Structures are given as C-alpha cells and as structure tokens.
Length: 412
Image 1 (cartoon, one colour):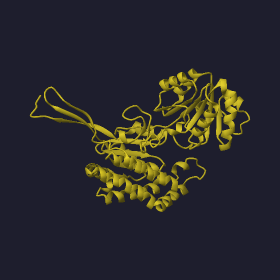
Image 2 (cartoon, rainbow, N blue to C red):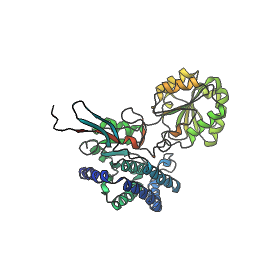
Image 3 (cartoon, rainbow, N blue to C red):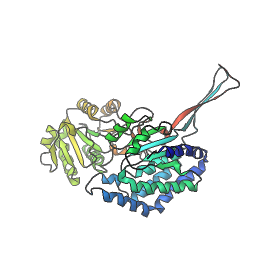
Image 4 (cartoon, rainbow, N blue to C red):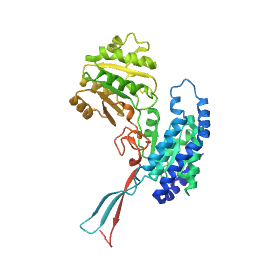
C-alpha cells in the first residue's frame, strides 16, 4: 500500500490552513475541544476495544487508557492551546542593508509534520491541536495498540476541520501497519520533519533509518539526588511523587541517589512510603544493607542503573557526595529530567550548571517536565536533543524561519 497520494493531499491542505483567519482558527480549536466531550461515549468505546486486546496486567496499559477525566483534560488542553499566541508571522529581524535591500526574517510553519508514536491516544489530540495552532498539516502514524481509539479520534478532528472549510487531509491518520513507516522515512518530498515519540527502540530506529529530518523526543531515565543537607520530609515527598504519581510516563523517576551521610535515616523512611505502593527496589550493596527488611527488595545489577522502568520499579544507589552523584548521572542519564533535593544553594547551583539534561530541578519533582505544566498548552514530546528543540517540544518550536528580501531593481 503506497501512501504517496495521501501525503500529496496533506501537502496541498496546508494552503487553506495558513490562510485561515486567526479568530476562525481559535474557534476551530474550541469546537474540537467541545467535540471531544460530545463524543466521549464513542471515544471510550473504541478505547475499551483497544484495551481488550492487551494483557490486563501490563503496567503500560495506563498509557493507553482513556476515561472521562482524561478526555476532559485533553479538551481543556486544546482550549489552552487556542489561547496561546500564533507562533507564525512573528518578525524576528527587520533591517535595511547599506545597498537599500530590505530584509525581514519571519516565523513560518514547518509545513507537514510527520509523527510516529506508540500506544498513547492522547498524543493524537496533542499533535493535531499543536500543529493546527501553528498552521502545520500533520500526518500521524500511531501504533496498532491504539488503532481503534486513533481512528475514532481523527474522525472527530476531521469532521471539525470540514465544518470550518478545511481539507480533512490537514490531519491525516495513516494505517497502523509497520510497513508504512519505511515509506515515511523516504518521503522527503512531502514530509518536512519526522517526530518519533515512544520507546528508546522506536526513537533509535527512526533516527537511524529516516531520510526526512528527525526531531527526537527522548526516553527518560530520570534521577532524584537526595543530598546530605536535604530536608528529609521534603526529599521524601518529592521522591515518592517522582516515582509513583504516574510511573508509566517518561518524566517519572527511575533511580534515587542518596548521600551516604543521610542514607541510614532516609532510606528507611523511603522504604515505608514505597511499601504503600508496592515499589520494587533494585538496590546497590550499601542501600541493600540499609533496606534489608523491605519486602520488595532486589540486589541491583549494573544494567538496572540506566533502565527506564515505566512501572513501579526503581533503582537506589548511595554515594559519597556531589562528585559521585554527578558522575553517576553523567553515566546513566538520557538527558531528560534530573533533580536534586538540597538546602545548600552552592551545591544546587553546581548541580544545575553541570548536569546535562533538558530539564534540571532543584527541590522539585521531575514530574513537572510537561508542556502543559510549563504553560505551553501541550507537547508533542520531550526532546532530549540539542538542535531546534529541547525539553517540552511544543507550539513555539513548530515553526521555522523565512527571509523576505525586498529590492528595487537590485542586482549583484
């Protein structure tokens, strides 16, 4: 099955979207938000169909599952996106050269954004809404895990598009078959950028095989370092929140690093809280001794550090101080989100300066690395690379630049 004609339609659809008046575009997004709530029953029915195929004990089902509250959150997020400034058309530079040529650099849409993602059906709405707000067409390739939910969701989006005089191809859902991905990789005539969102394996596969430029949204191996001057009650609250509030997402903590000066006091406190949630702990030798009575304790192997667990599992390591903590994070971090809990301002400043990550926290949970939490409306993903976008990849990064040059018969 060739998707070339489908991609051609997506390219053609850009013109009407880019001409749509600002107020109409905002109304469209509000209409989409309302349509999600209006069609809740149909969306949840399709979602149950997807969930029925999965192993009910798979912790990743939390990513796939939708419910009334999550749909309401999606609808609210789309209204927030509608309220954000249009990132296109901004004049980034404006000057006249000595020869009289007038130069303007303006922000313009990327064009057609391709997205390849796994499981999470909320991503369908996030990407569609952000691309519409930034006047980009989008081509979506979700996984078979969420195919029924995605099909219903894109059907709702396309119905709203048509009501506002736009082509349904402005938001296109490709078939879930894996073979489609290879054609996307070669679609340099039609796709301006390709964004993978999902497991490290998916991201690496796209990066290694795509001829279309790729903006990565990286896997998150996130650490919380409890430094020796930390207020232990705060450290406990932050660490538990980072691990258990939603363990299946990329900004959840995967490892807790504890200064040995406070480990004997803090780790029993952590054990008591983790036990309430049944967190499985993979502890290094020093931590293992201090947590020996913990019911869900295992001895950590080398590859347990650097694992993105995406479940109620966590590695624990003790260190002799900030130097060893920084070395450990440098070795195992995926440069997503890293946190320190400390009362020492200079230590916090050093941590922020030396840790190489998209988001670095002092005395706060890593769970805040999120486009909506950062006031960006939503996100396409969390970028861990350094070109074009880093951190929550949202509206303001879905544009590129165009130079407009005005002359009066100028020749060189």
